[in-house]
Amino acid sequence: MKILIDMNLSPDWVAAFAAEEIEAIHWSTVGDPRAEDNEIMEYARKLDLVLFTHDLDFGTLLALTQAEEPSVVQVRAQNILPSHLAGTLIAVLRTNEELLKQGALIVVDEGRERVRVLPLQRRS
Image (tube, rainbow, N blue to C red; front, side):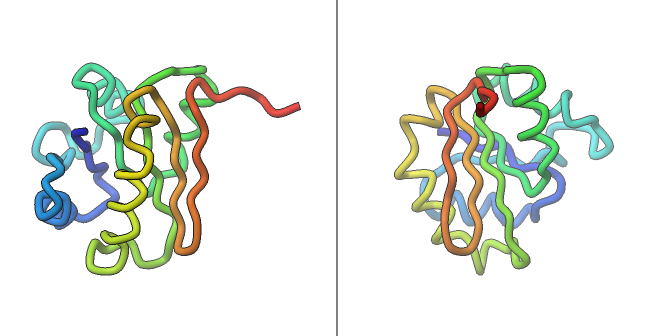
């Protein structure tokens, strides 16, 4: 599993992932910091990267486009620094690795995680 870290998260996440032997790159090192969300998603899709973000727009894009990839992990917490969330996030990634390979949206907050398989379907 390889991770693409969105601009709204600290580049320090690269080292946090590396410490757990997870390859990660920060968008600022490969793309325009002002890039639109759909450009970042396309980059992640083409390179088979899991997109890690604090931006709720990516879940909306997945729903609107009925996309089957890329997998997106959204963190929803006040403190989004690796020193606070790395342990929780790494555990979620390891637990859901197979689903992330297939295509999933995972929302992680301080106390729980929600996993939805892609493409996102409307709930009736």
